[in-house]
Length: 411
Image (tube, rainbow, N blue to C red):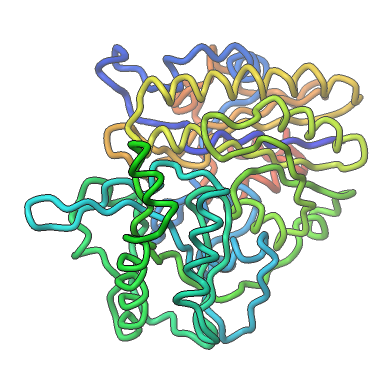
């Protein structure tokens, strides 16, 4: 049996009046996901346990069968794993965004948590220069992809409260700066980064070209290195792989024992190589039994509040990822495919929501497709009457006795 999970990050949403009360997922043209819904099993997954902030870190752990209450220690160390950054037990890793801070009415405001979606070649130079200027034996900076980077505090403290920058778009930053007993050195680094980046040549060129400057770092998502059982061992899989442009997702894959499969042109944005990801998944499925494929684009559009962009990202995901996989996987005699959103990223709030998200599972085995819907979307999934909560139970169902486990959920 071959298993594929196709995850459109943040696809789920709230009904929007402009779309006639439909969500972007319901409004978008998605014939392939609709086919899975009408021929497979439809339901909802609750990926965010009570007390956790909604985010792709916690949600993805749930999707991959891990209870966040037992396995989650912070976002930073998960990204460090994919970047090959070694952490001692006493080290703390922080996500380090390059952001654009604007001044308005005497206040510093989070203008853009992506620094204008700065490309990796420009951001790499900035982070490497920040490391030379501000780094030392205690604090080290590592370049990632686009605006997403890493800072490791060697022998550091977790006694600090931080806020994801994508949660405060357009808001004054002062109430959301790092707080707590260990916050002082982090605040100092962020302040020094603004002084340094104000005169950085990359930013001068960006400003001259009418683009947003990466004029500050933003530290958040801290944690120490976690330890949890490899997914491939827990479910006795004959190898597994993860395909994503995002360090966070690949880092979770590393801890889960999955092979990180790189795809040329995968960007973590709407210009990503959708079809290339699907083709790589099919290629590696010949030797691996499990593939987890992640696309970030719908989530980015939700954070931007870009309704048309989100609809387009969902349609591209459906056509180029889901459609390509559905056609190519038929070369295998037995397979199951799951398509889902990890969490909603509603256009109306421009950040994550903890509401359950829809999933659809199609199995090539006769008798395993039990609760269909006319189309794939939030309302159809709700009407199907299946809610897997806590969500980390879904993977075991998907990889195990699917029919039997779903029948139990229905009763």
